[in-house]
Length: 463
Image 1 (cartoon, rainbow, N blue to C red):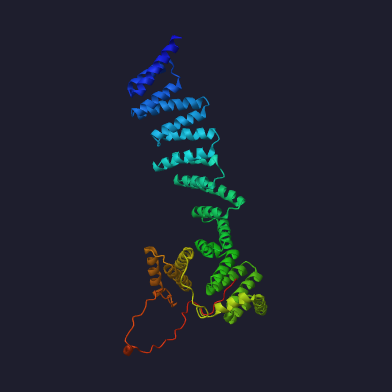
Image 2: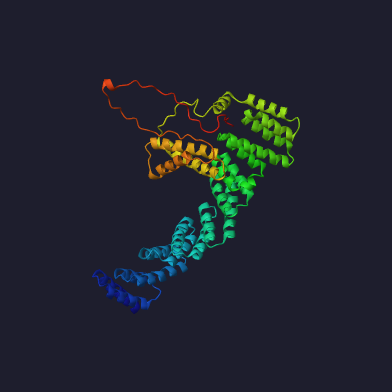
């Protein structure tokens, strides 16, 4: 009974001292209560609060931590969370406290809260360069939510930082299986590219990746990926055919015909005569002007086979729709001869799309030039420059864009190889002409200009 009376008196006195702002004396009084009952967590919290008022932050954190651990050990998770949050308000960078709070959320089944807190820890460890500690946290996070693709990717990247490439690839492989089942093609493309960055010999992934890009109509991405695996592609009939078809779609007819010829050679070496003859049909379909040469090559491959090859090509032409025939005829004319003047102005949304297309054409042109395909490279550079000029006309102007245009103009003015390339004329603003005296006026004779000739004069679009 005496102890109860004494506690009440001490508690009352301590409250008065707090109200008077005498925090140091109040702490002494509360300490008396704690001496009487060392497990009184409410008194510890009161003392910790007073330490905060006196700017004794380390002492406050020490007491708060004791209280939080006691609450957590007793199963009072919500109270423990509240106290841990009080600590983090004093010092958010305490890794141990953040981890303890994350684990509490995990026990409470609050997965998203736990992941948020673990992410704070992972970021802090990354800033300190502690990849080993960060890896342990990333593993926990991935286990908490195994369906979260971003968490798995970060885990794989952390393994890579640690130098454990095999473990990193294992994570990517499992993630790829998961994404394939769920049909998330965009993320699957990203994962395949990451795997191939370390395992370029994974030919089955190259094939699958090319098919995905092709299905999405990202033909230039297909060509870039194929160029990175040139030796493999040159022996794979399926990919060679895809490559030839893409060149034809991009109106790079000479390169398409050359690729179909390579396909015919590979198929013939593999004993597939029928497939080889079909490849020559594609060559003839794209280049009817080469009939004499193609006839010789086909007859050398299989005596008496050319008439049938020609017949099949003629049947294919008859099956073309009016729209397709029109495109074939247009492509066979010199570029620009039958085209109406393009509208120069574009919307800002169209400009963004053009910039992406222009960048892709530029990269593909650079790749072509590296492997000696000068004509194809120049054709891509012309496309890129034309798109950049249209972007400028929309009002979008940046130093980076201007530098790229100058680079393209320089490359086209000094093309490699013998191909002569005409650069698209610059977009000019029309300014009002100053009037001149009548006596100075002279009749102006219009010059008839030839349409610019770019690439082959006999191109056929292939659909």
